[in-house]
Length: 79
Image (cartoon, rainbow, N blue to C red; front, side, top):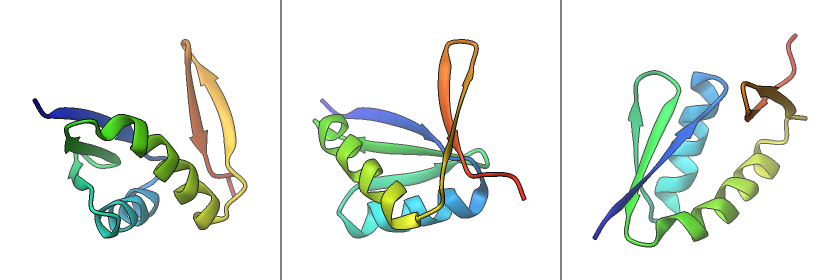
């Protein structure tokens, strides 16, 4: 059975970088509604978290954690 992992990026350029990086690593990643990405595949979630950590490090921006209504978002600094 295939699962879907939903990802929200901070900005469209970040979404595009993530899409490129995930696709190059063999993930079936597809853009969805602006800054969102769906990743399809059986057992994708455990491997995907490591790939996202690598993506954040590769992007190199000092991401800022923001907690809002029980969810933690990572966003690049303003400015």
